[in-house]
Amino acid sequence: MDLSNPIATLFPSLDGDVLTVLARTVRPLTGRQVAGLAHRGSQSGVRLALIRLEEQGLVLTESAGRSMLYRANRDHMLWAAVEPLLHSAESTVETLKERIVGVLSSNLDRQQVKGTTIALFGSVARRTSTASSDVDLVVVFADSVEETRGQAVVDLVIESVFRWTGNQCNVFVAQRELLRVMVGQEDPMIESWVRDAITFSGPELREQLTSLS
Image (cartoon, rainbow, N blue to C red; front, side, top):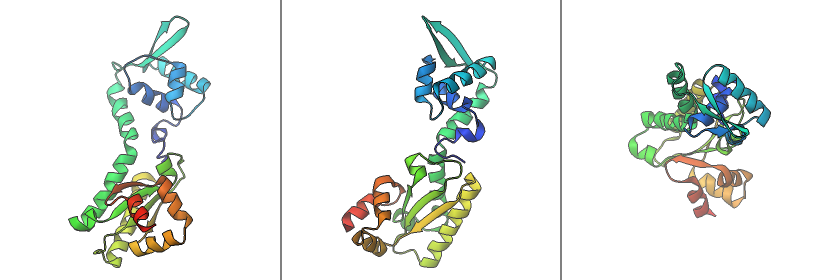
């Protein structure tokens, strides 16, 4: 799945991107505005998508001088089915984070989860991923987590992410001492984490790296 644009999983064409933009507002937008707010596609491609969606009744149009304005047709019989899909797609990465934390919560005690850092980095964190991109995670387990238990949790996360998304998952496991060595050696991975990493559970990764520099 393209985690930078999950709606493309359901709508491979630009129709999904256009519907996502229109679903965010009740204000009519010009085609140019829709194209500017969409994640992908040219202005001409967005215009064709708007025409298709108008033909299906999911988009309503009105004239404003020389421009055409577009808005979602929330009275359409299928809108009740389409809108939840759009919202679900927009929250895909947040839902993924929650599920990953859930795996840890099911296999570690509360204090271990609280003391374990989980951060997303790489193309998914930068929102430049594609459908074939891996999900890259860095995990710094709490000191009380035994190595065998930690590895079992990592294996379960990798398996679960693939089942949930269809994407391969890479997990870089680092103890605090390894982080210290990597910082001292100016490992390129550290720069990547400082630049891209999004900590979504446990102690903030950047703060740990800063304290070791």
